[in-house]
Length: 204
Image (cartoon, rainbow, N blue to C red; front, side, top):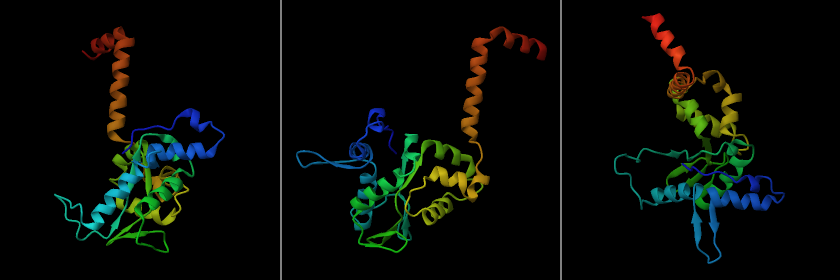
């Protein structure tokens, strides 16, 4: 998960190279002037998978022996990453850092004994939308279908949810709706306190 945002002045810059550098700075791997590397987001995911594949890291409370395929998901707060092309750019950055042993015809990458699908970008808004919706379908199936239908990651997960068969299975998040109603009730009490007293009298 990365709670960072792309700066507005970089978005408006006419130089696309500067924008790409800024994305790498926020979410990828950036080589500093002294030769050191700043690893964030996609680099951290790739490094984790590499260490799991090599056996250097081992889960403490889960058994990965039966796991064959990994779905790397970068959860972001910035809704700008839903824009077309961002998923493709960061998926390419992820693949470069992962340095797979083999690339299959479907774009899946083998790292050790694991097959890894291209990076998936998910925004916080999408995650909130899925909170209640995954009662009606499997999150695994969604990630699998998205990986199959949008292999180049040019279409965002958000757009895929809106245009695919999943569009009829999206439901409002219960917790988000509950929090919204609570805020509305508190606002009403502060702005119209006399109205709330009148409602109490009528109910009594």
